[in-house]
Length: 162
Image (cartoon, rainbow, N blue to C red; front, top):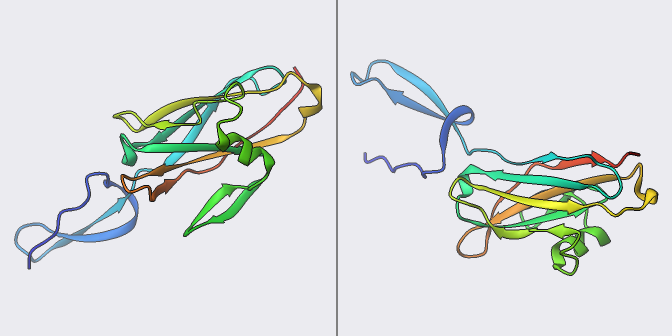
């Protein structure tokens, strides 16, 4: 029986797929668990009116893939094809993916670098009316055939007074 090789982006970690690996003699077996590297956002900055939130997108299994980041006022899950997005489809979501407000949603679409990373920025309006609002963000990556490859975990913060 010929074994097929695993995709490059799979790494040895401690989760879902379990393979039984022989030690050479065929008598003893050990288990190795495989998981695709997680896709997530790391945010930094002061979440208050007039400030900038830096969003570092990380998806090591999707190096050099295109991405689309979105921001919404509501959390998910929201069904998107066969995936669940961790944010809601609301007017802010549609504005963030439309590229009509690049002064607010900076670098919300692009290509991940060779390490599977990209950086975007959310410029919060300098308006006290947004204090107390929860803001949710997530991104998806696309393969060469424009199919969704992965969906990030959600990132959420609450805007507070300076």
